[in-house]
Image 1 (cartoon, rainbow, N blue to C red):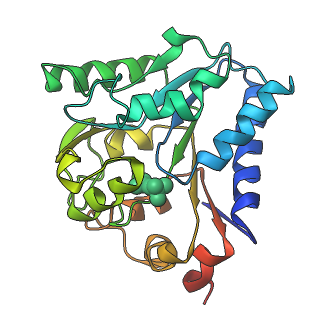
Image 2: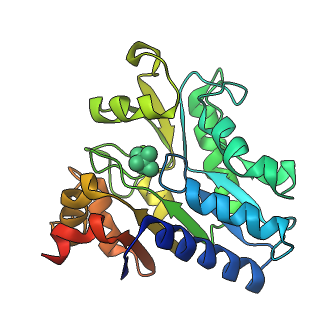
Image 3: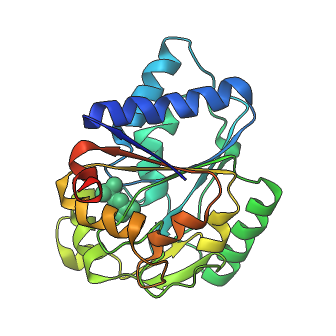
Length: 243
Ligand code: PGA
């Protein structure tokens, strides 16, 4: 694991964007796992700018979204599939049929999870972008999730439901109570991880992730077991870990 601490959020965005740009330069057909949430938005903005300036093409690359709300299909503005379109995909030259997402609107959720796992097996992820949830989740692997599991359905933790209010839901009652997610076992197969964490509110979580015990009570703690995980922090998020 490599931990990079930078002074500002903007530097974290720039660092993450550079990792994606370097990968695409070296491997234009790279498979990238994308995360929603607030943390990567600055980085996505930089990727769009780099594309507009002709510095990168996403044409041959593939995209897999990490997770989704059960019950929201990709046309729902608060679905993660829609959020990724808005944040990145609709602004770059990635081919629509190269974009994979968990289908929150599927009638048969188990079938949707299985078919996603199969697609992932056919397209091994080169770089997985990850955020850190306020309850220690990665993707929607909530506390208690197995550390080696496949794509699965999950009851969202109250902290995750609360955090969802930042994603455009008007009322807490509108937030779906279940999610579907790549499992930790699925994510572990990605060749490289890029976990970005920003802000003082996550400083305690960062400390627990990097120096606490590995436990399904705190799923992000599994990061120390990945051979090629990069953790990119701003100074505020690193504060408690740095001591
Ligand atoms: P955030 O979410 O980037 O909006 O803080 C991270 C997460 O829940 O994984």
